[in-house]
Image (cartoon, rainbow, N blue to C red; front, side, top):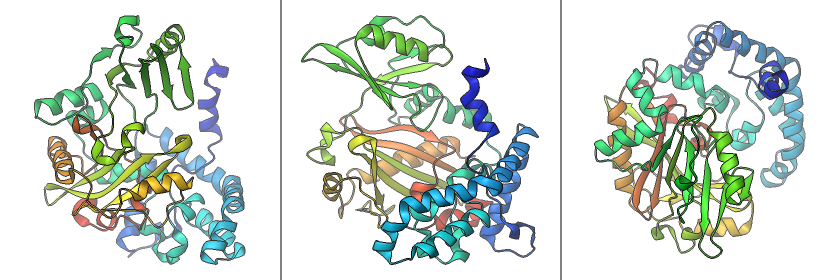
Length: 402
C-alpha cells in the first residue's frame, strides 16, 4: 500500500515548492490593493477546506522552502538561465542570482518565474502586481468565494457540461460514449475504423487524455498521449481498462484544426485558445486570450491575442524550441484570428450559465466542425496570461476582486 502510494506521500512530505505565497508586509496596515489581494489569498490557503490539514501542510511547505528548497531551486534555475539572459539583456550573473534569492526568500516565489514572466524588466515593487501558478487555487477562491453547486458541477463534469451547452445552442464537444468507472470495456466502442479522443469526465490540464488514432493505410490503431505511444488492439484495451478502474471516461470525436489556421494546421495537433472571461459590472467580459500551438517534441508556443481586435502577436518572452516552429507561428501573426467575434460570443454566453464564478478559463478551438468550446476551468493557469505583463484588469479591477 505504501509502495503504491509513495509518490503521493512524498509529494506531501517533501514538497519542493511552496504551496502559497507569503510576504512580510501582509502584517502591515495601509498596504496597496495588490498586496492586500495577495494577503487574502494567503489567508485562504490556511482556511480553505479540508481544515486544518490544508493550512498545516501549506505552512509546512513554507518551512521546507525557506530552510532548503528555495536556495536549491534558486541555484538550479540560475545555473540553467543566467548565461542566456546575460547575453540577451546584459544582466550580470551575480545580479541575477541575488534577484532570484530575493524573489524566493522575501516573496516566496519560485525562481523560474523571474525568467518566465520577465520580472527582470520590472522594478521589485511591481513583482506582486503579478499572480503566480503556485497560489492559483487560492487566488481563484478569493475571486469566486461563493460558487453554487450547479456551477461547480458544470465546470467539473465534462459530460454534463457538453449537455448543458448543447441545450443552450452552444457548440461543445459531443460525447460519443460515456464509460462508467470499473465498467467492462467493449472493444466495439473503440475500434470503429475511425479516430477518437478519450478523456476523464473530471480532470484538468489534459491529464489522462489520449488520442486513439486509426490508420486506414495499415488498418491499425495507435493510442497516443503524454509519454504514451501504444500500438495494437489488445495492448490498447488493457491500458484503457486500467484507466477506467476508478474514473469515468468520455469517448469524443478527435477534432482537427480548421484550414483557416494555415496550410500546415491540418497536419498538426489541435490549436487551443485559452480565453479568460470575468464578470465585470454584472456581465461577462473577455479580459485575456492566448493561442497555444503544439510544436515538436511536445512543446507549446504561444501567441498573444488582442481581446478587442483578435490580432495575434508573438510575446517578447517567446523562447522558441526550434526555428521551424517559430516560422509556423509567424504565418499567423499581425492579422485578426479567424472567427474571433464568434469565439468571444460563445465564451461570453457560456459564462452567463455560471455567472456566480467571477473568472472562468475557456478552452476553445477552431476546427473543421467550426468553433468548439472544449471545457471551462475555475482554476485556470495564471502564468500564460501574463507573458507581457501582469493581468492588470484582473488584479487591479475592484469589480473582479470583490
